[in-house]
Image (cartoon, rainbow, N blue to C red):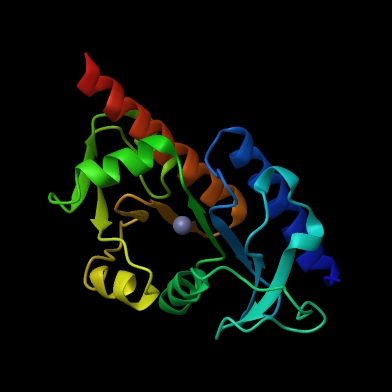
Length: 208
Ligand SMILES: [Zn+2]
């Protein structure tokens, strides 16, 4: 199993996965989640194909920076998500990032689909923006990039090239879902909650 510090992180990640599932942000075995292990070049990540409402500690596995499942987790049938490559690419780009979380909510899927031509969603003048690390006021503009969906993770990362600014907190994949990251699990969970709240606000404003 995991070493003590990794076990603590794995338990916190598991609680976060369960919370997101109760919110309806991980239907039909979708989504994936990771946290940097004590060995900084390794990552604890959710394994592929498991119903997130049934998720438990045994469904978290250790991988290296090439996405290979490490012993003793490399049993037959155990693999990490096809999207692992996005997680490892984000960790490689940002050494300070300790957690990467990815949700598939209805609002995120709808908005990423309807706004793919605009290539971004823009949020401003909302108090909840302070939920994103480094934002100290509602009086600001938050830009969330949208990139086309692909089954080739390299294509998705290529579409994000040049779009990771110092104040970029995440991105949407069109018709698919949200990626965000942070300095620890709690911060990254807060980023997911903030963006999901913003998506709901955006959709509600368009209805009235
Ligand atoms: Zn996904």
